[in-house]
Amino acid sequence: MIEIQRLKENRAEVLEGLKKRGINSEQDVDKILMFDQQWREAKTKLQETSANLNTISKEVGKLFSTGERDKAEGLKLQSIELKREEAVQKSRVEELQNELSSAIMSLPNIPRPEVPSGKDANDNELVFESGSSPTSESVPKAHWDLAKEYQLIDFELGVKVTGAGFPFYRGKGAKLQRALISFFLEEASQAGYEEFSSPLMVNEESGVGTGQLPDKEGMMYHVGGDDLYLIPTAEVPLTNMYRNTLLPNDDFSIRITGHTPCFRREAGSYGKDVRGLNRLHQFEKVEIVRIEKPENVESALNEMIDHVKSLLEKLGLQYRILKLCAGDTGFAASITYDFEVYSAGQDKWLEVSSVSRFDTFQSNRLKLRYKDQNNKSKLCHTLNGSALALPRIVAALLENNQTPKGIKIPEALVPYTGFEMIN
Image: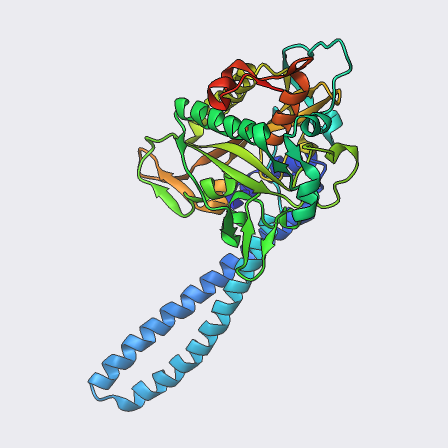
């Protein structure tokens, strides 16, 4: 959530930043500033009424104690009217507060200056590329054919039991996925991230805290009877552990990681881009989350990018990094770097990670603050990244490592799989 003070002091900058996303928000920003002014005025009136009521109540007590009953009864009638007025004013303050909150939460984060302008993925900026395309004497098979040939993943059984986008992993396919999870978690642990095993459902307040609600409400599975949401990423429960938290000083750099299944409805997804493991409704992912003070956030972002790079290099995958343009940057992020791996069987690039910086956008919603050296309360900065999402990593590993003898397992994974080949 954009800080209201930023809207007041830097209105032109905010409008220009949102315009970079392709959003003309002048009317929305002006409405927010109007609600804020009305709310402050209504709150001042309420405080004055409450102060008058308190003064009169004390005076009534004194008059009764001194026997001036008639004066006391007169003031008592006045206090009854003030109580009615106070109730109306409280209702108005609450109404304006809700309108202000709803209006400001509809605004996405402001892209950082280094974020390129653009409308969609076609305008993203390639910033790094590593590795070369795998060579093969024959045409590489797509992962869905390899999965069937080696009995690794059963898509049809998933459709039978649940529906499209919920595959079964079996045999060495299941072991490969488990090995990747263990590998990613161990690498995160060695990089200083504390591992958590989190809930897979969150309440509405948690979804609002990290920006999934109300923006992505249609993409989340909702458990109506309990008013809970299945998590779309471990980012939501991991970051919300610090909701409504005041860190006691500025001596902190919080690094946390967790593996969870992730659930996304992905409404409207269809066609070749969703075949096989390309886009699932349930998938496994290891997430890394950072909570930092402002002066550390840039170095933290670079460290997270380097961490994801190291994972892909140890897996021997060809990959590239894209700096997303403003129009393709997520609602809550101020800057995002996407990692894509090359898929030999499909001859295309597959996104496997997004590393994002949110500045104070999430922490303002979360009420996540710290005390600086002057004992002043300040908003923390948050970051997160996939390290890594498994489906497309599995797809790339199967497609890029196929040989006449079977599928070769990357050396870094062998200690976790217990086998060197799938055959």
